[in-house]
Structure formats: structure tokens, C-alpha cells
Image 1 (cartoon, rainbow, N blue to C red):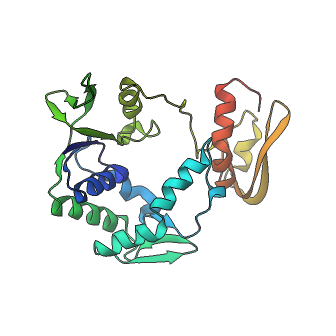
Image 2 (image 1 turned 45 degrees about the vertical axis):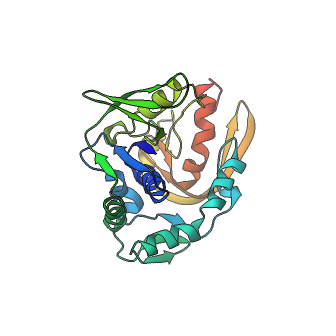
Image 3 (image 1 turned 120 degrees about the vertical axis):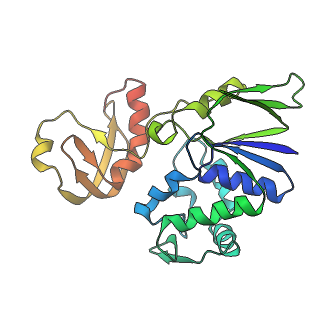
Amino acid sequence: MKVAVIGGGAAGMMAAITAAENGANVTIYERNDRVGKKILATGNGKCNFSNTHMQPAFFHGKDIEAAWNIIQKFDEKSVIAFFENAGMLTKERNGGLYPVSGQASTVLDILRAKLTTLNIKVLTEQYVTDLVLEKDGSHITVVTKNNKQVFDKVIVSCGGAAAPKTGSDGNGLTLAKKLGHNLVPAVPALVQLKCSDSFFKAISGVRTDATLKLVIDGKEVDSESGELQFTDYGISGIVVFQLSRTAAYALKNKLSL
């Protein structure tokens, strides 16, 4: 079976490796000049690749059960086993899991080595412009600027629209929609919040433990406790990141915060 993976980030490489280990002939399409570039920036360059404290309550979204079912099929123990079998030792710090080297480049090197070992073809600087599904569903054509290639299956793992400069410009969502998938409207999440008050510049840089309550149209809908950071434009920190998704949907629906 010929399988194409659109996007050579962490998810794309893991999908390609899994498909190849199950006998597929795999090709990765990556728009950047090399795969896994964003991995190098994770965990402040140390790559916090998983966590030992995994519970459904830690996840946010409309279908937490679906996310939890997926995680249970490949939990943190499975992740540790995968990397150790590939030759990377791991360490734990306050629940966070890191490579023993303390360098994100180690994780990337391990994944790239697996691609080579499994004879996975990697095509870089390839921007996929279209996916064309045969009427009978038997094959799908991957279209780039200069090439077309037919596959039995395609895995779309382009990320969202959070970082256009790194490749996550929403193209994956466009490709999925072309294939008939229904999409949940995308909004910023795990982000800071801008505030209209003028006094924030005077307290920029101040950090404090706080309980932050999110009030929408006069009704408290959620709250989080943890470190709050004031910036010159508003608020940041873990508590803000946790509430930002709900706040973003409220703003998208033109509700009052």
C-alpha cells in the first residue's frame, strides 16, 4: 500500500513511521527545507515530549472523551517505550518527560533516523496544493506545484494555522475541507489575551499567583488558578493560556468579555 503523509512535523513523522512499520510504502511531503524544524523550539529547546500526569480533566475541547480514547491507545508509557527502543533515553522532571540529553535535537535525530531505517521517502520544499479523490474512493492524487502522484491513502498532518512562518498556515484545513470533512472553526488557543485598559504598560513584567475568572456576557463560565503575568498589552501566563480558547470562541461569536 502506498501512503502519503502531508506535513513532516512531529505528528507527520510519527504517522509515517507507524504506517511503514505496518508494511506501507510511505512518502512524506514537507513544505520546509527539512522535516521537524518546530521540534527544535519545543520545551524551550529541551523538548518536553510527554507527561506522566495524564488525565481527561487536563484536556480542553468539545469532545474530551475522543481525545482521551486516543491517548489511552498510545499513552505516555508507549511514548517512552517508542523512544527507548529507538535509542533515546528519557528523564522525568515534575511530571514532564525529556530526552536525557536535555536537547530537542535528540528527539529530531531519533525520528529522522527512524525515517531512514524504514526507507521512508522524504520530499522537502513541496507545498501540496490539492488532493484529488477518485470517485470510487480507490486512490487519491497528491498535487504539488510541479508534480502529481497517486497514492492508496493520504494522512494530512499539516497542523493548524497558528504559525504561518513555520508552515502552519491553515493549508491542511483547506485540504481536509476539499475532501468533504466537516471542520470546527479554528480560533487562537494557548495564547495571551490583549486588554483595552491603559495601565498594563505600567505593570508589564509583574508575575503573581492568581485565580483568573472568565466572564462572558456577565456570566462566569470558567476559572483557572496558577501564575499570571502582566504584559504591556494585557495578560499572559498558564492561567491565561488555559482560558484563551473559550475566550477566543466568545470573541468570534461577538460576545462580551
